[in-house]
Length: 169
Length: 274
Image (cartoon, rainbow over all chains, first blue to last red; front, top):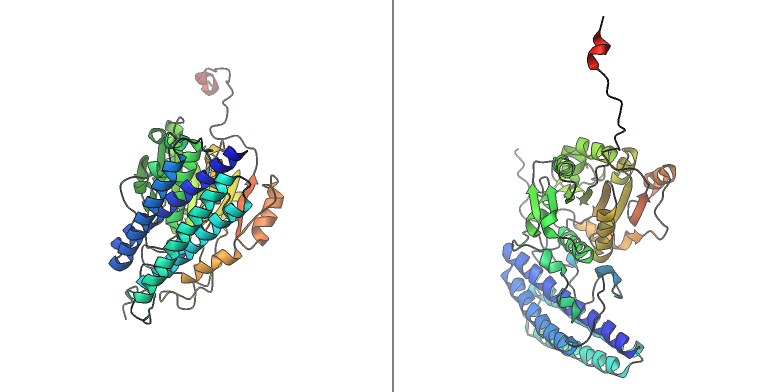
């Protein structure tokens, strides 16, 4: 039972960190294509953070048999894994501040997810790891709050499309 | 770690990076498709994605399988021809609402009635996005966000599921780009269905229809099992709000080509003898 809980937890952790990394990379690439280099750079940095966390999880999981769950078989609190940026939440004209706030929301969602796993588990090792991961996400969130504090004050930012279709008179 | 040995969704992505607008629902469809492929263990060398023209029709370039970026509205015609010639392949046609229900509308209804064993994924954002925001066949009659239709298109939009049912489609599902994991399951089931399977995807265009970010609040998963009765399905599709997701209709119908009954050979000249 304990091994099953640990395997289930690690399978979720691997998926969570992989999805976060891939999503950030994908969105960074899309932002580059749309000339939003500030946000692209930030998303790349977040992808690197997720890669480091993924490596940590993979190392812990290397000798453990993980369940081969299909994408729809994971038990996420919402539709997607908690740290994956929701597609409809981004915009090619979004500001760095908006991107950071979005990332902060996701770090907090991941922290909450890991904490709830720790609270619900009856296995000591799973509880310990889940609490550790939750604390790491909390520290990422704190770093983001610090970075947000260093940004210049928010300016009015509009997302409307400037380049309207040509309408001959 | 046994996950390493299995193909992962990202293994099905090509090295070509999408140029869709960040926020576009099509990213989610791409992810759902690759998740479905990974879950089914699809062999990419035996898989072909066929598309028409439009933002969504760029998708085959982003998947590491065979692909055909075809002519506007003709993805289904090409896909059916390919499947008939090569029944061993997994063939998936993809496109948008303009490509599928306007330019390719005739191919759509005939694909539904013909029932060749392919999957058709229609990524519906109710707008022509690639040409910068004109009304499509699924745009609401009063959608006045485009300067090209300042008072709205003024015509009733198609209901793709109802159209598919009336045309004879045996398997109809609806997914939402805001729920890529559910969409992955729907696509996997569609690919496994032995006949024409139609997956209607609500895939938001945040650039030209920013109001579609509100879809999240109205989309709901239909709890009931798929309907098998066409009358009941017709009633559902004509009266629902268009935001219910899941496998909505699943009727048993033999895929094309029908079994050929061997007829006794006749001497054709006999019929013309005076």
